[in-house]
Image (cartoon, rainbow, N blue to C red; front, side):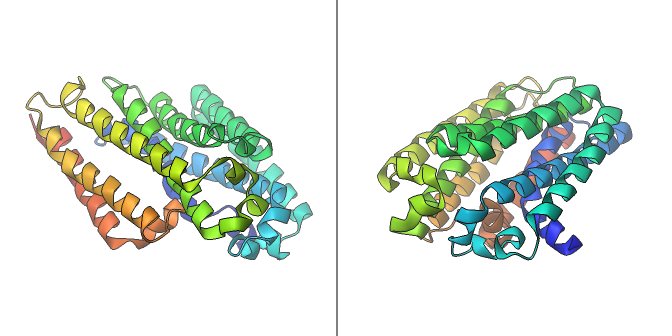
Length: 290
C-alpha cells in the first residue's frame, strides 16, 4: 500500500520542483549554509505537496485514466490503491506538510498553499479549458520560483528569471499537449477533454512562438540582468539553451515524446548532457567570474 501511495505521488515528476533552487543558485547563495538548508527543506515540502496534488488528480481522473493506454496502470486507476485509502493518505500528508511549511516560513507556506489551490482548481476545472490549462501549468512553475525566493534573503535576484520560467513552462506544456494528441489520435478527447480544443498545427504554431520568445528572453537576461558578472560571460550559456530547445522540439515532433516531460529529461542522454553542461557553465560563471 505504501509503495502504491508513493507511486501515485509520482516521485519522477518531483524533478520539476528543482525550480525552487533557482533563487539560491542565481542569487549566489550556494555557499550560505542557512539558505541552502532552508531551500532544501522547502524543496522537500514542495515535492510532498505536489505529490498530494497528484493523488487528488488521479482520484478525479480515475475513469479517463482507465481508458488511457499508459495511465490505466496507475495504482488508483488499476485498483491497486483504493480511493478511500488515497484520500486518507492525502489528508494525513497535508496535516504534516502545511504546519511544517509555516514553521519554515509563513510566506513559503502561503506560496505552497497558493500552489496547492491553483493545481487543485486545475484538476477540477481549469484543465478542461484550452490555453488556460497550459497557462496554469506555467503559473505553477513560477510559484515554485517564488517559494524559493521567500525562503532566503534575496539580494539581487533578477525578475528576468520569472519571465524565462514562464516561457519555458509554456513551451513544455504545449509540447506535452502535442505529444498527447499525437499518441491518442482520434480517441484524444475521450482521455483528456481539453484536447478537443487543440490541433497539431495549432500546437506547432504555439510551440514555435513560445520557443522563439524563450530564447529571446534568456538572451536578454544573460547581458542585462543586474546580478550577473559585468563581463557578459553568461552569454556563453546561450548555445546550451538553444540546443536544449531544439532537442526537445525534435523529440516532441519526430519521436512523439513529451507526453511525460520528466521521462524525456530522465531518459534522453543528449538532453541530460546539455542540461548538465548548462548548469556547470552557469555555476562557474556566476561564482567564479568577476
